[in-house]
Amino acid sequence: MTETDFLTALRALPLHPAARGLRDDTARLLHVPLVVTTDTLVEGVHFLSDDTPQDVAWKLVATNLSDIAGKGAKPDGILLNYPLSDDGWDRAFLAGLAEVLTACGTSLLGGDTVTLPKGAPRVLTVTAFGCDTPAPPRGGAGENDALWVTGTIGDAGAGLAIAQGADGPPELAARYRRPTPRLAEGRVLSRIAHAMMDVSDGLLIDAARMGEASSLAVHLDLAAVPLSAPYRAFAGDDRAARLAAATAGDDYELLFAMPANVVPPVVATRLGRFARGSGLYLHDAGEPLPLPARLGFDH
Amino acid sequence: MTETDFLTALRALPLHPAARGLRDDTARLLHVPLVVTTDTLVEGVHFLSDDTPQDVAWKLVATNLSDIAGKGAKPDGILLNYPLSDDGWDRAFLAGLAEVLTACGTSLLGGDTVTLPKGAPRVLTVTAFGCDTPAPPRGGAGENDALWVTGTIGDAGAGLAIAQGADGPPELAARYRRPTPRLAEGRVLSRIAHAMMDVSDGLLIDAARMGEASSLAVHLDLAAVPLSAPYRAFAGDDRAARLAAATAGDDYELLFAMPANVVPPVVATRLGRFARGSGLYLHDAGEPLPLPARLGFDH
Image (cartoon, rainbow over the protein chains, first blue to last red):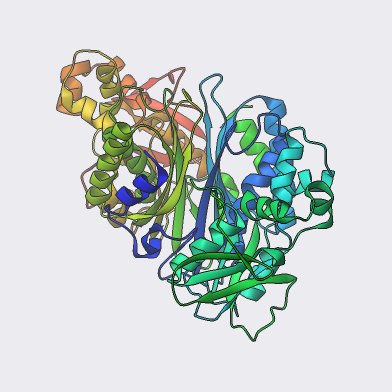
């Protein structure tokens, strides 16, 4: 079954009001000021078998906290579902877990350990909690709002290629292996953004999703997509390099909508705007572009 | 690494105050009246590959809600981490999920779907929330408190043998496949119990854990262990049958401590008492018994 079919079927089940129709990355619990999110990483699917256990721990926690950042929430603990294996892997994982919890200012709440059948790929789950949040929804953008993104885009996608053997700057591989959830930026932006989400599947697909959830069209300028110096050194700065960056995913930056006359108080780049209508419209310094066949990672 | 070693190592990490030192089945969140618990089931480890997907869904949700029942909490939604596979399995799983959510009066909050590499065993996680709870801890028993258990013990253990091919009453297999979390009993008992937990790993091991957490000895009368009529028909009623029942696990009944002069307002059986000292002491109608080599399922 595809994820879309499965989600459609899930929507026919008893659904919690806080689930927001399963259309958001997080659920905001009722009666309590708490958001919750959960992500599972599978060996050979979401991480490489030769990624270090420290990096796997970092990524597992950081990707969940990125959803918490997308809600402007303060992280308030994680649950870990962990498959026990050999001592070396487990101890290295624990070292990475300590690093990322400390770096992100959060802590372990509980979890579960299991033993997998011999040879089975590792499957790891983290559930993260965030508190004290105004939780701007993905679908809150207004007509004429500007679309912004924090940081730079495409680094992690290039980093994956480098992790898989391509020749390129190690900073890019580090951005793939150890994404930084934009927690401080999320806290500030949540007070002024109309809509916000983290960019995990690719800038174009996530921008299209924000437009769809907001029932508006999104106009995005490819020339505005912020590229890092290491990315330019690795992939160049032409249209193909920009399209690759904008569709690669794993950026874990924050995408947000705010009134056109407001400048966000964090390092961010204005990418385009929301308008009446529907769909994603791409242009490159004024010239309309056809959408690429693949906007990002579609589950 | 063993679970014990892993938990010891986890306790050296940044630990949330609500984690209670990772010594409980649930975490009680701070500032909000919410308990949370999470359990992972692995194909070939926690369920049989030929168990029906409906039963797997039931068991996955019911075992988590049993921890919620152990805290006397009202279930308030679940998160599901689900590996997508073939349509038939997924649809049957969804049907079972709808059944158990409806039967237990709770609903879906959110979750994550993944795709596993071909041939990998299914790994499924549910995280359950409970609200409005006084949350009696596992370690709250007092000296001279009586030890009680709801329902009957050993049915699921016998049911597993029957599910694996032994000849016996189908009611027992049903208790293994579709445990009933004692939610209503938990709500009532949480107001009067000093300590409470669900019995998942075996009556003896769980009673020993409650004693240890309460820094008291537990004296337990094997003759008092409540056996169902189908269990007696399957396994008999002698000492061996009682020891098998008391060490089998998967009962998902509630074990609780309360003052000796109080009779609980639910169907329950008095098993013994807490006393100064430490350790589990077993007797059979007055005669002291040595402890069996295996008290239950030790992770």
